Image (cartoon, rainbow, N blue to C red; front, side, top):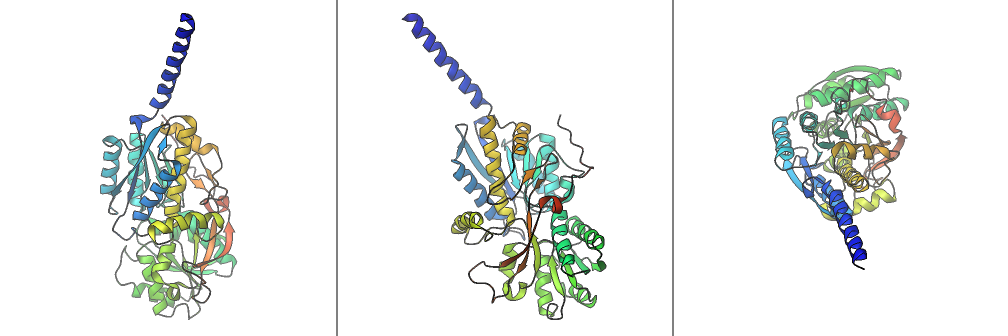
Length: 403
């Protein structure tokens, strides 16, 4: 009898030790996710509190714990400045033991954070950094680009618009790396498909008066005025073009980056007819509607593709930890690459070795006020674009070092 008791006790101790070892694979007994975003500036509506809300929704839907340990979300405001974003990321990784940083609008900030994530060997998933160099020459085994890059949006919009007869283009381009990258990629697609690029103007970021730039685009007589810009210039250019009668004169505007919150801010009378490519639209199907309505109940507005992507990536990250029993960064990243990514956000998604999550996009046109039947009914879908076509093959400039 004593032998049996000792044997049973030994087995129990072994099981507890085994369980303890498994749980010890979670660093610091907590999974900490940092939402590094713009809380008050021009990117705060499409990211900001909405991204924080999406992250918390993912944690809550997952159950609030993983491997028996809590999941926490912290928030930082990088104010669109690479030095502030980099300093926050360094402190988070070094001092606050953040396991994963997400969001990070503006490419310059995203690239700064990526460099630190690689140095510290911690994970970073960006949703609002569009520079294709993120998964190209600056690629890292610790970083992922989940929602879009400049090439995908440029290819998606330019290729489909040229197919529909929009074969002469003039660009209004934000004069920094992000805008220049959009213009470069879109121009290459226009020319490859037999179109013409008649010229470009390059206003600085956050230019208060864009009238002269819009007038130059109008005077070009190009069929398509390509808006190679992000907030706030992109929407101000579209608004100014409406005031100058650009659309009534027969020209069309194609935004190489525009978000549903931008369209909402402009209003359909000003935005109607605008062409754009997006990774996500809340009203696309039952899955997108179900999640988006839950988000709307918390934020009183529909989510952007960036905010929806935050939720999607965190769920895949947490599931990977649960499946492999550790939050060791490279092992988690490897697990996330194993399976297709199919959820309310992504169609035919796959996380590549270079950190780019390739998935299908849609080309949409903004509805007229008469076409819109209910609140936030803003887009009509013109074409579905495969991820392989939009994102293209891996950049040979990506040289991954995993040691």
